[in-house]
Image (tube, rainbow, N blue to C red; front, side, top):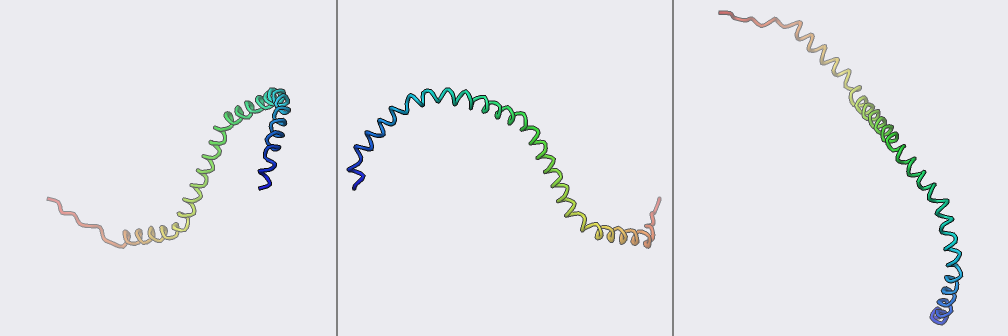
Length: 103
């Protein structure tokens, strides 16, 4: 409840501070814009130029990751494929060729 007692003083001092700070803000805004705006434009241009390069590097990274994942999945299956190839070759070499009938 004490804040209600001090509320008029808070309002008056806030208005006085705002009136004192207004000329300083009006002088500071162009100076801040003169410093900040060229840096913001430069930052935007760098982002615009570097975006394709970064996307290209990211795509290369995704491609390398995909190749690595395929390698991780395929490399353990190589011995099984070799055994299947040996079995198929053994089967082909030990069976007789089929006879064809001609008319």
